[in-house]
Image (cartoon, rainbow, N blue to C red; front, side):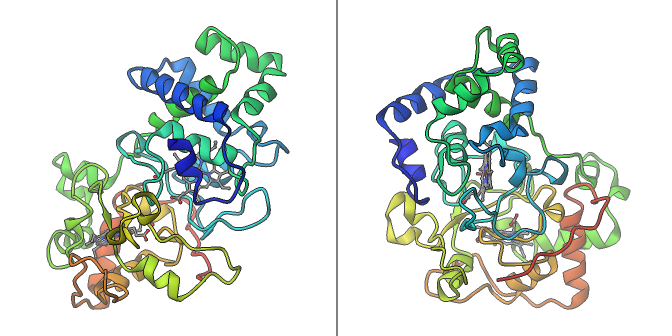
Amino acid sequence: MALAMCLAPVPGPAPSAAEIDAAGEIAASARIDASGASPAVVALGAALFSDPRLSPDGRFSCASCHRPDAAFAEPGVARQRGRDGKLLATNAPSLLGLARRGPFRHDGAAPTLAAQIAVPLLAANEMANPSLAAVAARLAADRATVSDFEAAFGGGPTEARVVAALGAYLRSLTPEPSPFDRFQAGDPAALSPAARRGLTLFRGRAGCSACHLVDGDFRDGRFHDTGIAARRMRRPFPDGVRPSQGRIAVTGAAVDRFRVRTPGLRAVARTPPYMHDGSIRTLADVVRYYAAGGAAHAGLSPLIIPFAVDEGDVADLVAFLEALGETPTVPVSAAPAE
Ligand code: HEC
Ligand code: HEC
């Protein structure tokens, strides 16, 4: 059932009863390895993550849309293109700190990591495998891959093992050490004066920490209407792809229309463009969006409150957000806005 539910927003074949059973088995095996995956399982998961054999035509791996060299997002791309050549409705997020996240996806449609891993493997507009068993069978055709699975699990590729290995790898992706962490650990010089002013704004007048809690990954585990999904309804995608209406897709409750999960902000400078629809190009524009009070409409969260900023304040908040990750070695280009 969970698998069927999380596949609902993407057009594609309904999962068969066997696949739904597999999801239960997969969830169970993912829980087991959450309690301590062996290094061999994590290494196998890392290899699978970048393995194009995960897609039937060998054109897509997970790393196609979640680049390991870019905080596991795809900088510069507002919406990813799937195997059917069409753009998805949402932006691929960073996968750092995934172990502390969940439910998964911007609308929380995937209750477990195992359920979420099945989505890109099966969705018609992502990798489009006919079943998880087909993925395992493709991997089982290669002797070297079979021995890697045997070394990790004591047996060859199965659907549950493919998902468990990917899950163990994803859970191992911890956020990169940042200037902010060194500052929190007691080194005041780790943050520039601008970033320190930005932190004061973030916690104070700008009101950001009401939802992006200043600890861990800067999330609150909740869903809020920040006006982005509502604005997208008024500004449909030029290619006609149906935009997300947020959490309502999962709960059916009118109050959840346009509510989206608060994303974490670790390494955020490395993953433009921003928001679930990739509609904001730069961090400075994100700050200006909030300062203007978001996109006004009836359901807007009362926690989105306009605040006065000059360009110095914008630069300070951006300096703080940049200090939540490594500085990219190559400047990240902004994406075209739709
Ligand atoms: C065609 C591009 C594409 C491919 C290929 C892809 N993903 Fe994603 N991924 C996305 C997008 C877009 C989202 C955001 C979904 C949403 O919230 O609507 C996402 C979301 C996720 C999430 C949820 C993150 C969160 O914060 O909730 C996980 C986990 C994930 N992907 C893992 C994977 C794995 C593992 C693979 C390979 C099996 C994979 N992805 C392949 C585009 C892709
Ligand atoms: C009412 C809760 C709330 C408040 C207050 C808030 N945010 Fe957010 N933030 C969210 C949610 C929810 C999203 C996801 C919106 C979407 O994807 O449509 C988000 C998205 C973001 C993103 C994009 C992250 C990404 O990877 O795409 C950034 C950056 C951000 N917020 C920074 C800030 C800053 C800076 C402030 C203060 C000026 C702030 N937020 C205030 C809830 C909030």
